[in-house]
Length: 349
Image (cartoon, rainbow, N blue to C red; front, top):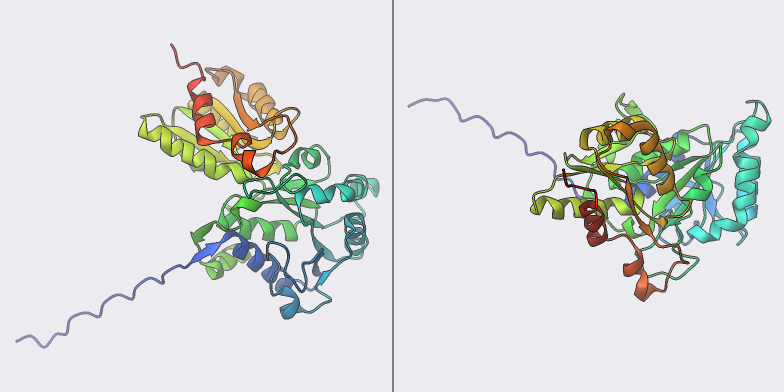
């Protein structure tokens, strides 16, 4: 009888626990605070309470009241204080409690935060992150569900990021904090409780290694397809993916591109997808008139006109104030509205 022993079983791969979008953001802030003593986090109720959506939960206890603290209910003062801190080599991360609550700070953001680097001919940089929970889908009322990204994207000097996945919530917030330029960081509120099996420790190692393929401002193909391209970002990404899945069941292959970054804009990835499929639908929650969706359509038309088999169409929020909670499902882009737009892309030969 052989005396050879059976080989030991291979160790099982660690099971990745589901991580929420909110938890990924919280971990990104904690890691940024740990990595750089100049990082400070402040805003309304972000300290003891941990923020309305608990994104800053536990940071004050862990890092102390000088690193994560509450402010008065004065958004202009929050932004103005961030300017002074950033001018003195700190990296403020400020939270505007809801999207429309940021409007009182708008003058500080567009007149000073966006312009200081240019105004001083490059002598002064303002590495500020302005976190804004935005968009709908949570049954909120007006002043709590605005999609205000166009105001900031229109302002030269600001970067505008909006993650749509748990992994990007971590990676893109770390990128924003490390940026030497001001970043308006839009967080889709309805995705805070979304989950994905992500190893945050491995994600931290990946970020700190600065993988070459991870470049700031790059879009990604969230789902490959051949028949038409859906260009979208932030809260509309899951809806676009659901529409692509529904289309696949009917025999139509839709490619979904998650823009990730509105400013800077990744024309390269977008153009490659458009030239591949020849048909495009742009999906966003904000009203369509004079919007980011409008800019995307213009860029596609200008750069890919001869590759288009049909006019570029949009599925957006309507040009009305955000509706009451019971009506928001009719206002927001839906799977059916996206599929209707795809059907209208002039498929006849």
